[in-house]
Amino acid sequence: MDEENKDSMEGMSKKERRNAIKEEQKAAAKAESRSKIMRSASIWVGAFLILGLGTWGLIKMSGPQTEQPALSTTEVAIGEQVKGAENAAITLIEYSDFQCPACKQYAPVVKQVLENYPDDVRFVYRHYPLRQIHAQAQIAAEAAEAAGMQGRFFEFHDLVFDGQDSWIGSNSKAETIFVGYAEQLGLDLEKFKSDMKSAAVRDKVNNDYSSGTQSGITGTPSFFMNGQRIQNPRGFDPFRLLIDAELDRIAASAVVPDIQIEIAPDVDGENVVEAKDEDESITTEDGTDEE
Image (cartoon, rainbow, N blue to C red; front, side, top):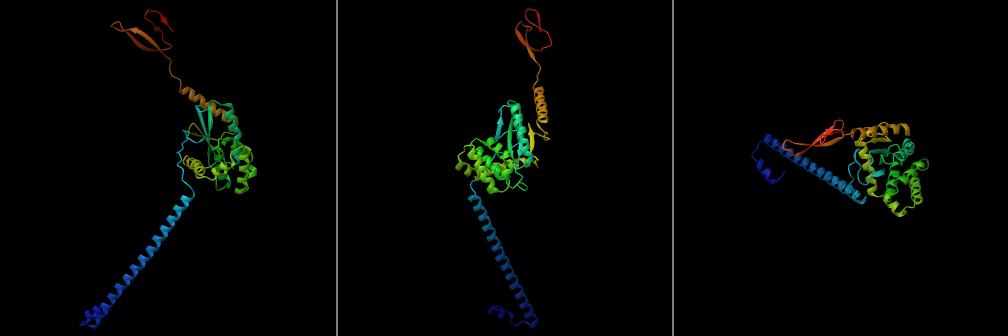
């Protein structure tokens, strides 16, 4: 107890002194408690600051984040993997996983569709790697995109599906095989290896995956035809029926009445333009009827 408090207690009764001491002890305990809280808060703030800086550092070390276009099921974005006529009436989008056995089975079916409808169908391949069950699906997608940066996506796509059983064992084995595919296609191997591990390629694959999830995709393969989700056709013939039906629908919606022009004098003797349906007779200026 300091001298000032001692002086203030002179003349107090014993009871008053005891109460004063208790109050002083309470005040000291509160001050100590506040001090502990402040020390604890400082420690937590410091820890969060270090964690935040560490996370920022890891992001910076992983390379620049590439902004990716938002994807829809009705439009094709710049940089997508597309095959077929640019002005085709039908856009067929597939969300696929290179390690998925069913996707491998559909690859030749889609190829047959494009061969039979070269002017009517354009095909868009989007990645949807099921990472939880297919350990090499992500690296396969990234390798294909790396090949795509050298204009050989679909050739690489075919090799990956054809050799699916050979590379599903481990990432290191898969990477070695994919580099072999790149060499087989005559790609620049150093560029291929660099691109395969780049942020741009990783972001492209992840953006495809995110767009699939937003579109309600939960498994592969999943197809959209002109923006509409379709039930997976069981082979080329069912696919052909769907495509023919869509082409018929498009053709029917494009039909407009055949309008012909009639020139007739108005009340002042000047010519005016009138529209008549093709099944009505048209009266010309000389009074004859024509179809």
